[in-house]
Length: 298
Image (cartoon, rainbow, N blue to C red; front, top):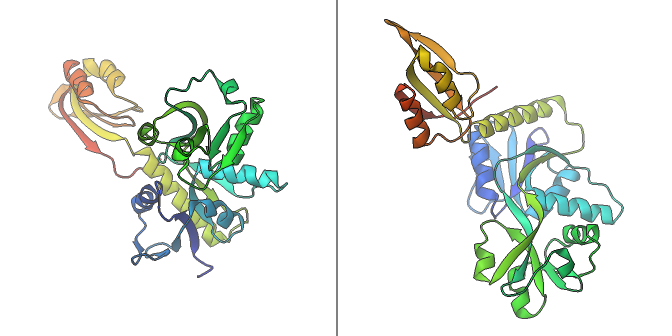
């Protein structure tokens, strides 16, 4: 690998893989990747993407094998606690929170089993792939329980008799429901993050890191944003500005030949629903047009 190029580690296969690649594409990165290859080459940026196990990403960044990593907070926190348990300090730096990969690390009990708060966990066997975070949760609540560490298929542990309940990642809850489990406690709210090497980068590399972060910020700003254009009587401006969802100060443009009317242009950082448009029209707006926003730099 060329040391002059940025190395970015992403999950090889899993829930963060496609959103991570979509984010990079939206940031303008063109990559070439052959089938089953574990590295993609940035054609228009000095950036290479390494596809690895998500559990390996913090170590690769901490050890300066990769300059950056896209990884879930759940993986990051578990690694941080694992290192602390050995007396070591996590050296990777979390530099961005991303707007995808949202899930939660939760405790779930079999259906029909009563649960009356953390005290119900005392003396129980809890299966998980996140023993360090679960241990911290139990310790903070002064609960003594047995942690059964599994590498996968945690949700079937109670049916196999290996545990009384589980602590696992939950997105929609459908997996829990399919295995007759009920979510009762949240241990961690998780989301995708960007981490970077603890070492100082050469100026040319650091400049590309800053450019990439600026583009990520721009992509996240417009993820749900819409550009609204409309005509309105000047007398209705105050009400229309109040109705525009999540908008900063709109641009007001005089309409040639119509002294009492203006054009209003605004970027709305929230979803624009039909009810919003109907309310704007009722307030006096006309010629309403809603467009998606692809890119935006503050």
